[in-house]
Amino acid sequence: MSSNEQSTGKLWGVGIGPGDPELVTVKAARVIAEADVVAFHSARHGKSISRAVAAPYLREGQIEEHLVYPVTTETVDHPGGYQGAMDEFYEEASQRLAAHLDAGRTVALLAAGDPLFYSSYMHMHKRLAQRFEAEVIPGVTSISAASAALAMPLVEGEEILTVLPGTLPRGELTRRLRETDAAAILKLGRTYPAVRQALKDSGRIDETWYVERASTTRQKIDHADDVSDSDVPYFSIAIVPSPSNARRDDAPPQGELVVVGLGPGDQAWTTPEVQHELSLATDLVGYGPYIDRVPERPGQRRHSSDNRVEAERAAMALDLAKNGARVAVVSSGDPGVFAMAAAVLEVAAEEQWRGVPVRVLPGMTAANAVASRVGAPLGHDYAVLSLSDRLKPWDVVAQRISAVASADMAFAVYNPASKSRTWQVAAMRDLVLEHRSPDTPVIIGRDVAGAQESVRVVRLADLDPAEIDMRCLLIVGSSMTTVVENEHGTRVFTPRRYPG
Image 1 (spheres, rainbow, N blue to C red):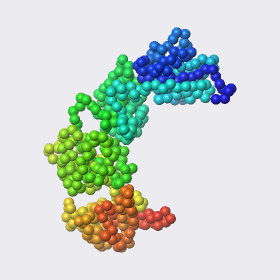
Image 2: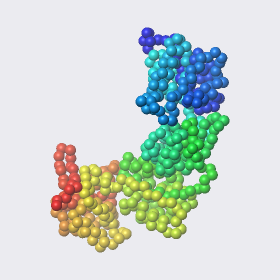
Image 3: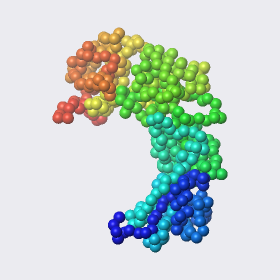
Image 4: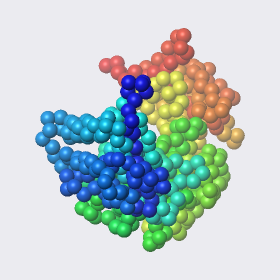
């Protein structure tokens, strides 16, 4: 600050906490008592919550500046709309405070909660801190007060807390609730119907608590879905604790089974929705290597099994859910593509599991992952086949290969080979060559998004079965599939237009 800008007045941004006068800090109480001017906001009804909290610390003879918002939630006829009206108000309010500061008076501007956390003080600070000395006294936030009222930790360890304004669009609010461990939703009031729906859409309504006027004599705590939309004031907050801290004391155990797809290999390809469900699960069920891909969480039980016991695995998961567990059945890729979703739903159709809710969450498929590494070989009509004859006879597999090849569609091949199945790749190649050119491109993707990833493009006639194992996925092109070689590498695409 230059010498010609120096003023003897000082602006204090005073956080007075969430509403209980005893939660005002010692420093805040001292500054309020010593200030020449105490400023505070209110709506047009004139009742200032901030002044009421600070009242025990005021002294006689202080100048009071009552800053009345021109609008809160009602409509406004200002030519600049709501924002224009508020900008004009903040500018006029800052000029009123500047007059005191120019006169050498100290000004304590009260802020509910913390002055730099969704507070009106920030608008004054931006306008005055460059001209006058300014100091901020932090305050207890409504989030801390609500957590204390619930006697419930919000997060622990490496869990993530997200603070959300209830004014966000419902879809965005839903997305963020799905992605985080714990959340605090502020700015409720008229936004509560949309907030409630976002909590339902994200699957978090049952674990969410509603806290109204935390720390005050009018404090109210309820389950978020039990609150009437018409009874929610602005000074309320929705708390979504992390999975390790969530509880609903009066709710009986409600089991659920969710079949999730982790995507192929890289954790970055696991969707936020799936990551959230994994964090909520009390039990994980799946093939051992897939379970190992899920980060461990305290208290979460992990049930690994061999890859050939799908029906038994599904029955165990359903039994856990029937007895109140929140179960995530884990698949690689997408659970509905040669994975656990069909197995679970088949077993769940039995009468004994009829009361267990089952959901399926999609994942990135291995076919799409391999295709993306070379471009768009699946850019037109395509099929997806499995070469495994463990669950269906080879005659059916061969018939389908011939049908797809004769239909001139690109197709992805899952389960091409294993230690006990070594001849099917050659048989497939020979069947396709009855309908396709030897130059037809074949993409061989191995361990895509994993530590040993490799992707190659070969001619159909050059496809060597000895190079293929269970970690591979093949994509066989159509007659239209094109290979382009340039300085950026090999690109493969199947055009969307088909010659007439």
